[in-house]
Amino acid sequence: MRQATTGWRAVRFRPVRPAGWWFDGLLLAGLVALTAALAAGYLFGLDQAVADWSDAHRPAAAYWVARILNYLGQGGPLTLIAVGLGVLLAVRLRSARPLLPPVAGFVLINVVVGALKVATARPAPSASTREPFLAPEQALPLFQHELALQFTRSYPSGHVVNTIIWWGVIVLLLAQLLRTSGRTLPPRLAVAVRVVPPLVVFATTLYLGWHWLTDSIAGLLLGLLLDRVLHRVPWDDVPLPRRIDQDRRSRTSAHAD
Image: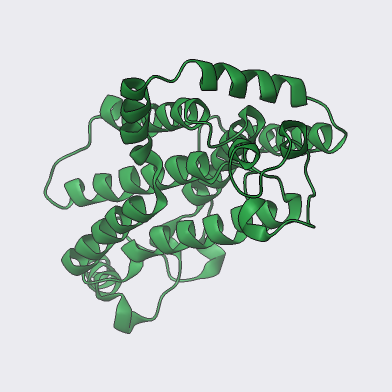
């Protein structure tokens, strides 16, 4: 990790691509517009058509292939991988700083995504075939707060958000870990790791009938927005107490010499 600065005034946001805040604004506007459209009762036909097609084209073999591939977006294992890389890097650098990205990712996922799920209160497609056994058309609307919370956590798709955020954090930490050994993460591999899993999880989540199409689109928009937030943060410059950031002390001393 590069030399840290000494105070908040020196902190500058890191560049992301596409550069600028305009893309963040587009993602947020898209999420708001999609939510407003669903609240007004639009796009239900599209959601139902995709769900019906998936139900009609899901042989056992394809189901299990999709089920296995969907593990690319399982929050538990991805959290453990990210935290494990953070701990390994923290030990190597003698600093708690590498733990900041996974902690921030965990907080964003649970607070932001969790709050939206509770606020929008939308059932999943399976709500019409298993408990609470709603009529198909009753499983589509938002704001069904009269149902138990366990049945209304479909919007936005946490699978898609998990995949975007956690693979982004994993690539960030893996690149830093390789740099400590004098190696670099190939740019094409980094892009592939960040792009392929979200696309696979987006497709398999729909195919398995775990989310409506608009749930996954909302997850994609929100995941990209939160990922840009995480990658804008200059983690090397966030002030930490010296007792948990020995690497910063050694780098500061080396710079002074």
